[in-house]
Length: 237
Image (tube, rainbow, N blue to C red; front, side):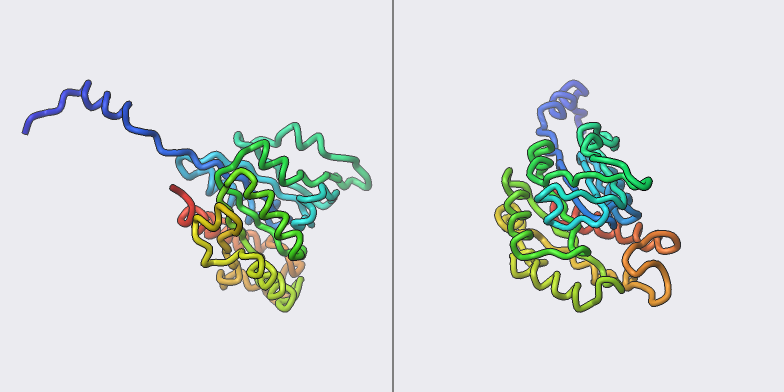
């Protein structure tokens, strides 16, 4: 068999179109600040061809990202380099009683800053409304990005009834597991229902009923890894 000259192989490689980079913006609440979000961020960054920025604010809801609500129980900000961006660290508004208050970054501004091709919304543990979900979708889709929404797990606090109500609101606003990629780029989100990860069902006598920290951190990290795999399977080109 005739050998193809090395120079021709090199020319062909140079002429081949490069795979499109996936620019991913993640926004979330205290779960994103903790083991779940840190593993989610790391797993997405580890995928070849991705650039990832992650913003988690403890106690945040969709409304927090729409109105720059102040919270004081913790945050995680990482830009494409994995560093805390000076721009948003400057959003810290005051310090009192050793608590660091930050103003939640506005989602529309984050979308403008990072121009993501995919936005991952990991919110719902702190409640939401139909209006805040609708406005979140509008902000996410302003630049035509695809969207995936990671819903909350089955925790002790809030109750299962409250979590069921959160998922009912999401589905009413077209955030569903059945959303096609085209729909998830237009006016809806592909839903990841975290209740499907049975290992996340919150223990009766461990933790604070909400967070996967301390001895429950391995479960939070597993959740982040599984959620990242689901996101990449659905939306990576």
